[in-house]
Image (cartoon, rainbow, N blue to C red; front, side, top):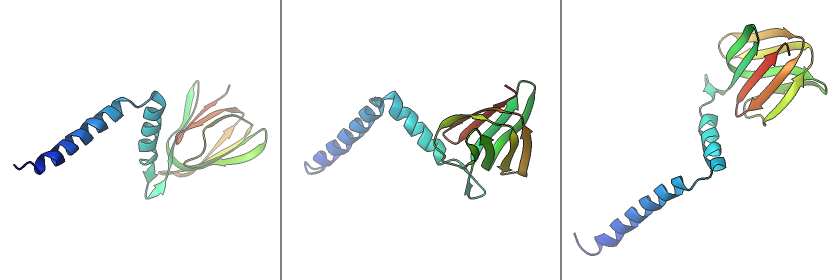
Length: 129
């Protein structure tokens, strides 16, 4: 090994040490963002973007699985949720909610109201509240 090779080895070792230190120095927010980004890339079904949807009430599970879209209504009117939607919380109005499922096609659920939470391609809907 010549002296010319040593600086390259040190540069690689220094870079690896910096990478390890950089991972350790990530803030909690950066770690959550990184986790969300990795989940973001794993939300494909049949080559199309999808999202996880769970619709349940205290005594019944209505839907639990992947979906391409969800349509419902709130106080401002009808709306759709697609993969990569912004995070939000909403009270749902009485309506016929439509879930375009990855496995089972279109699922229709008649609801009398509920609460919806959308975050990182996960939609949780709690009915009968």
